[in-house]
Image 1 (tube, helix red, strand yellow):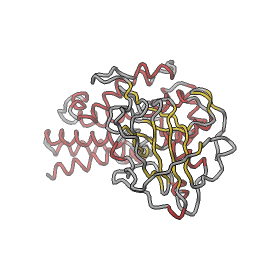
Image 2 (cartoon, rainbow, N blue to C red; image 1 turned 60 degrees about the vertical axis):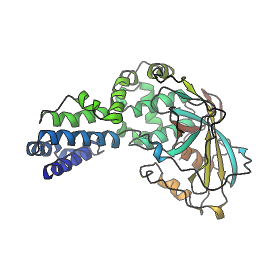
Image 3 (cartoon, rainbow, N blue to C red; image 1 turned 90 degrees about the vertical axis):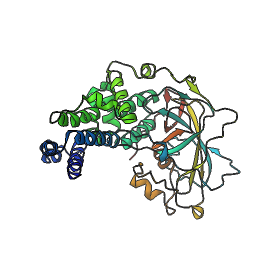
Image 4 (cartoon, one colour; image 1 turned 135 degrees about the vertical axis):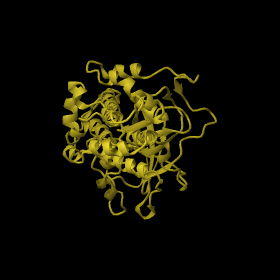
Length: 382
């Protein structure tokens, strides 16, 4: 047991170093030397078991985007009746207006996460959650600022996929690299590393010091986490193709359904509608699927009067959710949201299907758009 404990401690230090944004600090920790000493002291089987466990943890913790239905906001117990919304439009004239208490409805574009076999169709019930993962904030800001700037949804979609696939920025198309510099310059350095290569390097260091199986063999033993990495490996040739137009990515990345279900899943006549959830103190929302991925959907909102605001229901697994500090202050009863605050917050939301094998959708409000590729210019604020 002491040997296993030692190996665990060593791997913890390796993972910290591997995913640290401070490369100099990582080098000072000399994880390879520590690993060498631990492997020499532990039995081969014990080491292999520990490598599998720690590698699985590294893959999940270091994932650019983590998908977990269990992090969804629970259905609210507050009755939402007599809902009479007014259309909410994001325009240059409205962005700084306060969001008064009341009922609202707005169009949102759904951006699928990575890729999957089934599109969500009209009426499919969805639940809402905050984005999670090592690059969740980057993806949220990309959609928020890119939508404001009028970047076509297909272009933002392709860039978000490259982030989710861990493709280093240098392998992106030149135009996309320029957009990163224009839209999210403070995140450029975080997009330089290769997530999948970091995982492989961790294993390679262990494999050279013990008779461990091939990396691909180890991945096949790790269940859904290993399957995720294998899937990302297969997609890399497409995601790293600098000559491939964004519009062609879906047809090349999506596979054929193998479960006998149609490509597009729709809600049945007996399916319940999406439930209401309290997504922030006093702000209730529900998502209605109309066209699913890269199409118009509807987000309904009820903003309660300040004297009726109650603490938002916290889910026990929402620890890693994206909740910007600036917005936390704005969600207090002392300060009302503006339209722009709301737009930024919505860009950090993700919708999960209720018990159906359809795509999870990141939401982006439609801004002064007349079509999927025709958006007016608003400009980046602040």
